[in-house]
Amino acid sequence: MTNVLVLQRESHVARGVLSLSVVARITEALDYLQDLNKIEYIVISEKDTIAMNAILWCDVMILSKHSSTDVLDLVKYANKNDVVVIYDVDDWIFSFPTYSAAQGQEKKLGLIKEIMSLSDHVTVANKGLLTSIGEFCKKQVYVPNGMYVEK
Image 1 (tube, rainbow, N blue to C red):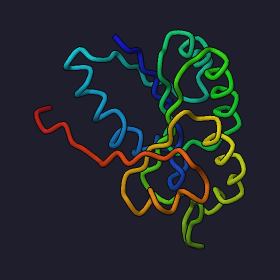
Image 2 (image 1 turned 90 degrees about the horizontal axis):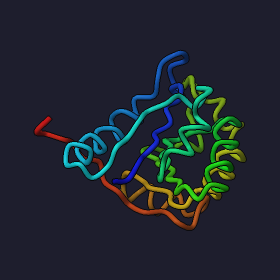
Image 3 (image 1 turned 180 degrees about the horizontal axis):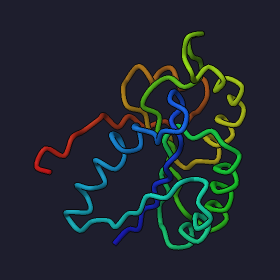
């Protein structure tokens, strides 16, 4: 069985709130695979002190639009321990309108690019992103959104 670590993060647009992208895009699909006994997964905050130990447990680590130095350190640690790192992008994170609470994310563009470059795969939610993200990364894979309807 494959052990999967999903890192949770704070929302880019709603300070103090957990990311909905992680739940809607990542754990929804993983629930389905876990119910089929294909994987076992856990979700841990990127800031949790046990994250390093969780990397030693997992075969795969999944990120969703993460942009912190904490995650960069975790990705480097995962790389050293032969853990496959997947960076998922479900919407455009490289610029935000002036009214958005996420506008400060643009300052983290270099960090985002570095995390993506250290990831084994970068998954995107739609074909527009597949084309557009090529400017930032050369190993993108289109994985459309899905719903676990039976759940």
